[in-house]
Length: 636
Image (cartoon, rainbow, N blue to C red; front, side, top):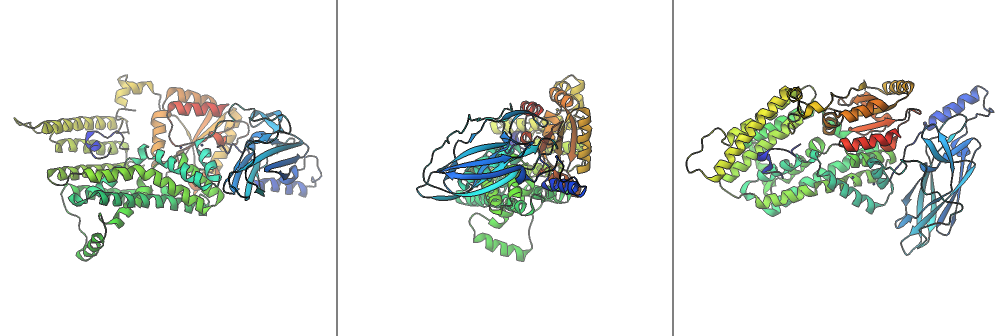
């Protein structure tokens, strides 16, 4: 949000392993059909629906350190070559070598077009490598999937976990029983979505990989726009300590802030693993009943920074807190921790691929430890730049004089900016009002910098510099006001989408009008839209939107408004959108139905099977080029 703040604000504040698409019915649905068949006296019919373990009989043997897995496939059934998934669930130091698959048959599948499948039987050789010097008891999870030819039923993914003892060493390759096929016959089979990459990392069960992967993912997430408001919040906390702040004190406050934020993310992962993803804690903290009071608190804190009044607690409570504070180094660390928790819940990063992957796997596996540790480590990676900024900021802050007043005033302006950024997530506040607030903030800041005061003879270079900065802010504020009154809604780009610029033939004139979506609310609405699309011979693109989702608005303003994107989407998809701002029961049911944790999320459904092409699901931000590339992959 603060990435492009004008000069005044810049003074202080300075994401892989595919799960693949699963064209599956629920297991209960298969059993229900089987039961119905029997009750109608059709149990002996040639189209009898077999149980999954009857249709695909699994067995294995261990030769050396290689697992030879074997499947007997029932007549008129087949297994997908590219739906195999192998994961080490237990066994430190054991990895999977190069797996050998038999060459399959090329089938013109109703779901995917031409794809490699197995009939009758197949063998897969899975070499396991033990990098330790002792025998390791390991658990290997094997996932596979297949369909019935005549009935057209596709079974859910089948999971088998085997336990084997692996001796030290082992080859990284296995002997090929027949001509091996190392890649499926699909142009997009090698594509791995960001979410699937992190789901597979978490599902590997290897703790060191999880820690490193999610720490690096959090570090990358730290440089996204949604994170920038945390910089001035932490800076304001340190500034509030005044001239007594030391480098050690600034480090301690920054550390407490970051760890409180990381613990909050960890708790989110733990909660999701407990309730299987039905509880989206961040969505609850985007309610107007939460955002408005906290925005008012930030406004009050800002005006206190400006010296309009002093915020004081009752004398008795103030005395107790003062005593606690004096026993701490660098200020009231309890208050700093509370700000870290609130920052993670309210001003924290928009849901991106890394967070979605972690929360989805935690919900799917129900593993509380993995849910907690992955999100906790992610929070620490995300907070590392904050730790550096907070510590060095404390070292270089001015220690005395009028500069401290300037720093306090600037911190006040930043607090007001954060308050406005909270309010703009609330749908019932008109966009021109929000843009007017931003404009007022810029203009008043320019006045305070002396933009309207004459420069006296002999004035210093700094005086002239601040006057110039003030004039710039007033002009920028007027541009924001003009943009807001003419249809723009982004103060960082105040003329984008402006009717004034469009009529003048400017850059916005090159953009098409907003992409038109069919709105849905319930699972029933989604099913109806899918059937409608099938009748038209088109796929479906489902966009999840929320007013409090920053990336969602970026898609609307900069991606969905692109003429080429609109042409591509309209030619190939029926476009539907679910607004989950309210996060009510119907919203949660729809999110759970398609296994989406939070927006932004864009899903693509196949025009023939009406099943989601899950590997092409989009989470997080994309620009026009990236989005177009993903859509073209989803069309194939």
